[in-house]
Length: 349
Image (cartoon, rainbow, N blue to C red; front, top):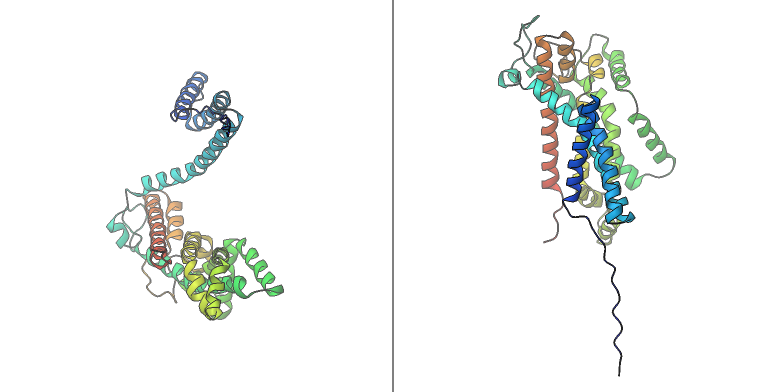
C-alpha cells in the first residue's frame, strides 16, 4: 500500500495592487507641490526633481513593507530608469516645442518656394527655396561619397580584414569620428584651394567636407550591423557552393539592410545640420544656384545662422528654416524606414 506524499507548502507573496504606484505618484506630487509652494520655490524643474526623489523613496518604502526587499529593489530600479528616460526626453520635447512654436508662423508654401533676392533690412518677405536646394546638393554629394565608401570599408573589416591593416583602418576610423567639423571644412577648402584657387566655392567642396565627417559614422554603424549577422547563415550559403562575394551581397547585406539603413540615416542627420564647414567651403548667397559644381550656394544651417544673427523679422525666418530642416530630417528617416521594410528579408510563413 503506497502512502501519498504530503503536499509541498507553497509560499505566497503579497503584492501591491496595480494602481498603487500611480497613487503613490499622485501623493508625491501633491506633497512636493505643497512644500515647494510654502517655501516659494515652486518651479517646473524643482517640481520634477523633488517629486522624483519623494516618489522613489515612497514607493521603495511602501514596497519593502508590503512586498519585501526583493520587489522593493526592483521597483527602485524601475523608478530610476524611468526618471533617466524622462530626463533625456525633456530636452528633446522642449526643443521640438520651441522650434515648432516659433517656426510655424512663417512656415508655408510661399516661404518654401521663394528665395532672398531683393530682401533687405527689416522686410518680412523672403524664403528658403535656395537653401533647400543647396542642402540637398551638399548632403547628396556627401552621401554619394560616404555611403559606398563606408559600406565597402565595413565589409572589408568584417569579412576580409585581418592583421595590422585592419587595426590601422580601425584606428583611423576612430580618429576621424572625433575630428572637429571645422577641421573637415578647412581640409576640403585647402584641397580645392591648391587646385582651383581661393575664389572657387561650390556645393562639391561642402559635400566633400561633410563626407569626411559622415564616413566614419557609416563605417561604424555598418560594421556593427554586419557583426550581428549569424555566422550560420554564411556557413549555410558556403555549404551550397555560393562564393563569398555573392554570400555577402545576397545573404549578409540583405539580412543587415534594416540596420545599415538606420545607420546611414543617423549619419546623414549628423551632418545635415553642420554649419562651420559650410561657412568655409560654400559660403552664402541670396539667389538660387542650380549648379552644384560652380559658385556659392546657400544651405539651411548657414541660412539659419545668418538670419538669426540679424535679429528682428530675420529671426522669424531662421526659426521657420530650422523647422524646415527638422522636417527634412524626419522625411529622410521615414524614407529609411520604408527602405528597411521593403528590402529586409521576410520571415517564414
